[in-house]
Length: 413
Image (cartoon, rainbow, N blue to C red; front, side):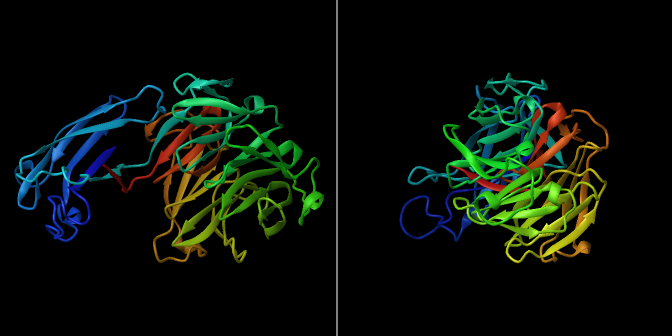
């Protein structure tokens, strides 16, 4: 993994007092200060300062990164690293004294790679630090905006929370749990009890839970209350105040249009064996990705108009899907593969020709992190924070993060 560090200072350019900026938006003018290559396996970093004589030029003077350290903090997630940079300022300008000095960081991966977030490869349910806690047969995972992850796992049908480097059980004793999602602005997560054909809501701390809709038997009903019925629901996603359900047995995508009152409507009625569903934004508009396990077709659905289009046919057995950054990530537990489709900006996402196959992992079951990753029975997927996707790698008994090969901007003060 690489990091590109851009110029110093805030956007106003007023680092030495007064009201007149030294230059308009000089953080962009400063260009890139340094490239930092990080090896998370050995926790080492290599610094290459850019610019004349290996120094970055800022306002005709030089600022450089003198050193970089990479280390793990106790209790952090398996893939988490801390990068500590030491700057050398040979200018006469007191950078950062009168207002915060901001460095803009961009991360870059040269190729698709995977990193383990939690799970040690054992099929059980044990709590504790991520380095020792087990996630037995994870089936679905969802990441909140604060980085907390929630997992529905097959072992003991537990609902797990991964937070601040610790794995805890916040629910258990359910029947065949599958899709899981949550409200980033609220207190609730939602998951599926597939054998009871219903959706459960649970507070994020596990303190309170209830049946939201469906069950206890299979059926095909919409509306409100007892008329709401599902048949083997599998995938679940939250977006813009609504829940979207892949109702596998009925071959439909259903939409819970109000989380509290739970009226249910059919959004798409022509998706055979709908297994995965995910809500995302592509080119500024909401969109759903949906998978058909029996046909291998990948669908996109407009959640506002119900427009539905098949945009690719892959191998049968495809299962999970996630939408992020103009991409669809599709899992196939039958072939142990991850496929990534991408639509360029300006293209119509409802047209098959708009989508290109960007990546497909080897069709070989196994466990490899880093470049050329391998998976074993990957089930449901979801978007991760930033430029990444989360995959429930069920037979490796791990939650994995798939990292995509492009830049993700952020800032650090």
